[in-house]
Length: 442
Image 1 (cartoon, rainbow, N blue to C red):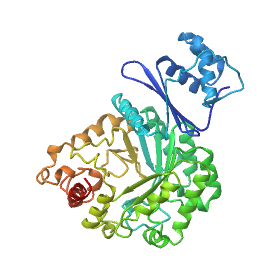
Image 2: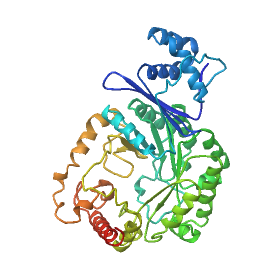
Image 3: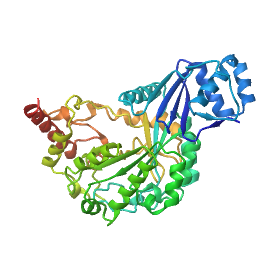
Image 4: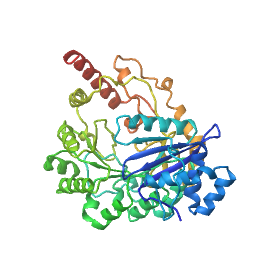
């Protein structure tokens, strides 16, 4: 029996030109491999068949018998497979490309990979919003409280993951609300890994702190990434935003435990009126922990949650951009949304949205399949994103700095992608920050 190592994520893709490519991720050593052509097909047979005699039969049928043992030797040497059998080292370098996830050009590799899959009509990522219930009460929360009674159970999740797998998905993100309080959370997470898909978890860390067994179980299945929100290094500021005293301590504790267990961790710091510019200290902390850091100030307004008080003022947004602008990579003012094309999101009531924060409903999985949504409904959504449909836009000097993103305006519109005050204010602040940086730094 040939075992695929539990820390491996992998998938084989048939391409438009009748060739094949496989991606393999070793989460232990943070290495990604790419293999092509007949070797890719051979790898797919190893994943599906597992027994040497069956794999050998496939290899003979496809004239690959002479490289089989060498390929198995290389896979074993790189800790991709585990087996008691010994294989001759008759070939080497059959895994055509290797890159470490810590390499500076890894994001370029990821982009090329995603573009390849999009070109060949594959879906890359799916986000499962397991529930909108939460054990915190964040002041800026935009999740629709009308959906608090819904949650995705294990049976629905398996069906969705199977459909997504057939559409090419390589990674699954479990989020919410707070995903870890879903009673089927670990079963769903485990099933993602049983399909050898990358597992990403977005969490506030509270349940992972309270439930030590759950934390241990999650570590055991090798998530590709765990992302936690830390709103400030000051516990009072963080706890004020979350509405729960002691939440800062629990989040920080989980971050440190993830570090000890060598789990790839991302720390995010969303900027609100309650923690303006707090991301600077949080970023320094993330760097000291050798963890990825994300920050943002783009506001999601939901009048049902009465969360507008959490939005930064125009002046605070400007200060944020002055601190964070990459002058070599400014917004270019073009609408370029891949929602529904490379990613898709499923809500607790099984509505399907183009991405995790765009509440345009493509369909509901109770009466339509993911495949049907991808083949028909996504095209309708993308047609609505054409710049010529933005009747009130492109009239000001700051418009070229606008992100034109339906995510950040969906609750302000009297229709789809109409002019949004939040988007306009953000674009003006971004423009002012660019002019400031040009004047004072360049």
